[in-house]
Image 1 (cartoon, helix red, strand yellow):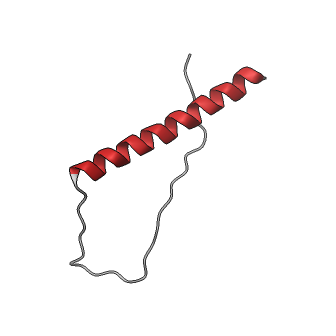
Image 2 (tube, one colour):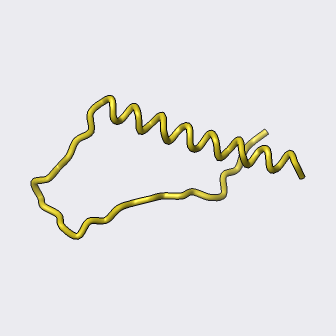
Length: 56
């Protein structure tokens, strides 16, 4: 059964002070942690939506 996601929430922080030399790179551990966090959040939301659909 296909699942359709109708809502996508994107959060961003904009800073007024920027410099051309302040490039920050993430370590491999941070990238892995962020991927897991995003995956968990999306999975939780999909499961919640499926539960709501089944309750109807």
